[in-house]
Image 1 (spheres, rainbow, N blue to C red):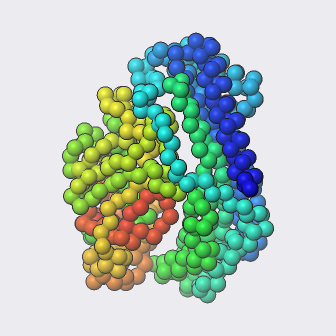
Image 2 (cartoon, rainbow, N blue to C red):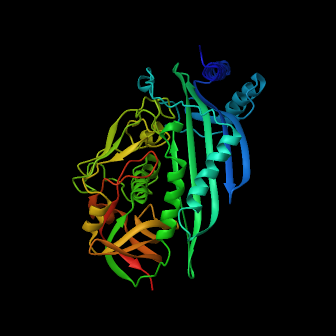
Image 3 (cartoon, helix red, strand yellow):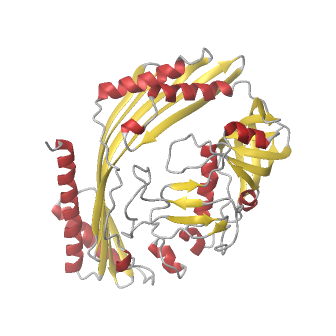
Length: 449
């Protein structure tokens, strides 16, 4: 027997695809030389508990549509949350009116027709969770209870939250391409406060997945939040020094995001990137490979096509430490005189080549230095690569954690930091679309007392 929920999603997908086709037909009727449109529909449930009591229960239902029309190299765009036939026609009319008042842009237009995604792979992204409010609240409470009961030094809670979302995304353009797919995302998180003497600290943990069965258990999420909180109690400050620095895996993913931002086409054609003109150059040690796999089954960033309708494909952005590819959508590629890399909307499911060292081995490789577990502030200059962030973590001597540290600043230059990468661990233990272990950097300046 057919699942009624899946049948309903199929009907919604067909209806939204028809909305796209109607919009494109209306744009042609109004004389547009080209057009593209996207529509989305999502539903969700969010619950939050704190100290064993329900704080919020929120049901969400959102939908929206945008359309862009082109009259030669003139572009106009409009959006609406009203999907009635009259509203769709009005949106196209508004976009056409705007296009008549815009300046010509030689790069305004659709990506080449031959690059459209003609076959959509099955990526296993749609796993609705038939959980009701009472069950969601019970699971969030279980997570928080596990955190609060993990250690007597846990004295307060910022709560636990559970979210489940299901959506449909459809894109189409006047090349004849219309494609869409359903997807889901579920998450559970918890944050608690610990106290020992005069020291108080907070920390958190979370899990996220396309399918509920792929999430970490609620008890584990709670205990992990408590363990990380308690480990930070009794933190000290450090004197200013230059030392090796080990970035915990999820923070190493942040260093990778800075790199991807620097090779993003918009940053490059605007000349606001510290990696400008570095294509084909070695910017990381030869053992580093950064790979994108947009077709990873159940991947949190998987997609069969990008925001331009271009077929996504696996590729290396970094190969043997060399910058092998920029991150380009059609518009930025045109501005740079290049071809799109199928990355309108960003990179999807990045993985970094990981070594054989676990966390203990990476601490041993660090020897004496700083193990960073949290970063604060936004002190990153995308033009120069200068990097300065507030940090906390642990001081390490002879490969062993000695004591937690706080209220320090770490500083360097991203290009020098990348070139000074000593090792990458295999201790990837955080949820997300990026897969990497911890990163050990040769030396950074640590400023404290």
